[in-house]
Structure formats: structure tokens, C-alpha cells
Length: 330
Image (cartoon, rainbow, N blue to C red; front, side):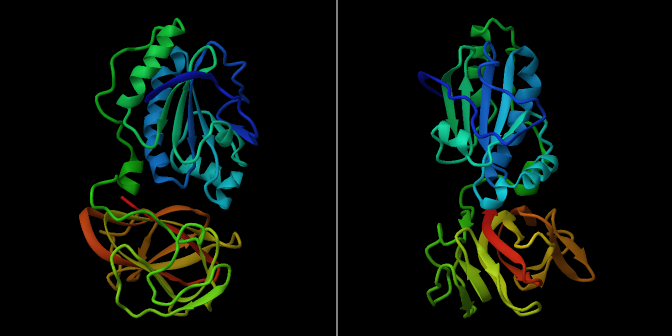
């Protein structure tokens, strides 16, 4: 973590609900050391940080450390408290969570990205900050230092490696040469790989030439290009698709449903349906078809391979309430 000039920590504001704890304030936590984890369940680096933050909570919470996960929203659907609660259950989050649905606490701490970790000392001063994903070794020494300053006697034996967790297996880890995360909403993506120009906030008819460059998103069929993603706008059963040629071990996609009712997609790799060997956690392989019943908006794991491989993934909507937001790789 980075040492910063000590400044008074702003209190938590705009918290809609507290989970795994009673409502908290920095005033009542005076004398405690606080690790504030500003995160969102749609951020891959935030998900990779959960096992580390959970371990710090389990190791130091009885020695004066209070871990608080301030969950804010990167996408509109992530301000839905029901969605956040489902994500907490999926990833086994057991430490206190503040639902910062309007990003007020996130803004109070001057954030502009996820995740961000802030260490507040026992006098209510911000002493350390850390941006992005980091190993547990980057957190422990500053935590021990501030706990000792507060008169606590924390364990001083440092963890030798990050905790093992299913999150790493499901979504994968970053490596050099891996395909980048690509958000397809018009607030972030300038254009698709298709040769013709798409118009924001309108239904566009996309034609696919079949010639695809690496790390470009291609569409086929009728799609409404929204600020955060694309909504399928054609008839059920049409030959529409979202496609991308990638290099990774894991293909994750942030996808959802427009009306709250289950959406259905089929998933192909290099033109073939997935098998039980390469189907991701959220894919069902049945009767020769690989599909996902999309029940809520979150990061679905579609493809897994043991080694980095180059393939083209094809996502085919089978209902007209399907929404695609982002490719995320591991």
C-alpha cells in the first residue's frame, strides 16, 4: 500500500443498507483500524481481491481491525440491492458490507476506479491507500503497523501466499498477452469490428463479413446500442450473435436480462458448441448444445481451458430480452 499524508477520513454517506453488520460510522469506530474496500461486483480485480480481504478480516478482526466493503455501482443494475446480495452469496463474502448504491461514499473518498483500498488509523486519519488488485503481502505490514500504534497485539507472521479460492479458478487470473476487457456500451466503445458505423441509442442492423480481427467485438443481427451495452432487438430464433476472437484461459461476460425475466443464450467456440471439458461454470451442456439461462445481471463464466488458447467465442441470443455488456478474460 502507498503511504499518503495523513488526512481526516470522511464518514460513510449515502449507505442504503448494511449487510453482515449493524450500521457503522467512523465516529463509533474510533480506536479501531479500518480497512475500507471500495469495490463493485462487476469488476474482475474486485472479485480477485475478495479472498484477500476475507482473509484479512478473519485474521485481524479480533485484534482491532474492522473491514468494510463499500459496494458501489459501475453499471446501473449494480445499484439494485437484490443483485448485490446475490453476488455476495455467490462469492461467499462474510465481512461487513455497506451498500453505497448512489456511489456517495465512493465519491467522498475521491475514487475514479475500482477497486480502491483505504487504511484508516485509530484516530480516524487516512494513512495508506492502494489502487487496483494487490497481493495479501501488500496489505499486511501496514495493517500490523497501525494495529500496533493503536495498542493492539496482532499476529506478526505474514502470509506467504494469497489464499486459495474458487474465484481464481472460475474467472482466472491476468497474464501477459491476454485479451483486454472490452465494454461494448457507447459510453466506452467507439466502434465495433463490423465495417459499417453504428448509431448510439438506436437499433442497428449488423452484417457480418466473417473476417474477424483479434480483440475486436463483432455483432450480427439487430441490436440496440445503449450507453452500457447492447440489447438484442430481433426476433427469437434469428441468427444474431456477439463474437470475439481472443487469447485467454477464461472467457467471462457481463450479461443480463432487460426485463427481469430469464434470458437464454447459446455459446459456441470456433463454430462448435462447448463440451463439458471447456464449458465454464455458468454454462449447461445438454443434448449437444451449450447454453446459459441468464437470470440476473452479473459476470458469467462461459469458457475455461487449462492453458492460454486462441479461439473465437460466439454468443447467440435465443430470447429478445438479452443484454450484453462486457467481455472479461482471465
